[in-house]
Length: 312
Image (cartoon, rainbow, N blue to C red; front, side, top):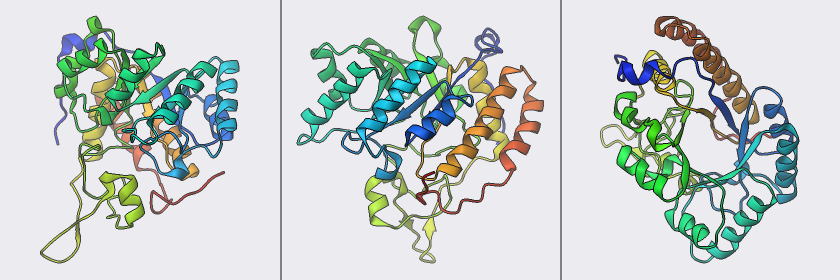
């Protein structure tokens, strides 16, 4: 797949900037590790606050999450609360109140999906830094403007957008921060809030009903020809490295490492993502980045199925 080149004029003015590094965490120990080893921000959730994650990806206790907020404050770094799901009516008031309570305690901001939640907070005068999740379906510049006007400060760019498609969204006049996943290491070819296919992160069909209910993007489609499961084709590593290079040159302000239930896997993804990000910040050529990036991406990752739960 050929590299997609955004407009040179837009890219040229944003070379060699520093991207903030954001990592998903599940414990105070994990947060402390990442915040003292190169991360600028962490994000985390609680099971009682609806978010796009299985229970094992959330903190076990609110006390530990509050301790993480305290630690980040001492280190002058950021903690974002995950609330990126549609809140069911029966839990909405209590869950929204808990989000507001943690913001008042010191959380740096909230990652959301549901505009009803954003409007709820606006009416109650809760002011914080709102990030729109990839699940918010912001696919173009006009959608980005819509969310900006309603109080969103950052969007997480949907992974299926190519740099050429997303380039108009990198408009400095709008004043919106844009966050991207480290695509060579974490990429979903489908619109992840709507996907009903097997997980492209592992290329394995997931048939466990519990996981299918937790992640619609993990539901498997059975093939009629041989009874197997269909998995969407992935771009090759060179294409994804080119995408990441282009998003950096467009001016992406933040690089995100996804949270997961396997602590060892997330740690390795963090180190690899950090290496790729620092290469970009050195100003290496596209060719050098792809050459070195392939070596980083191709090194071993032997953790089995992605959704094995492992806590340190």
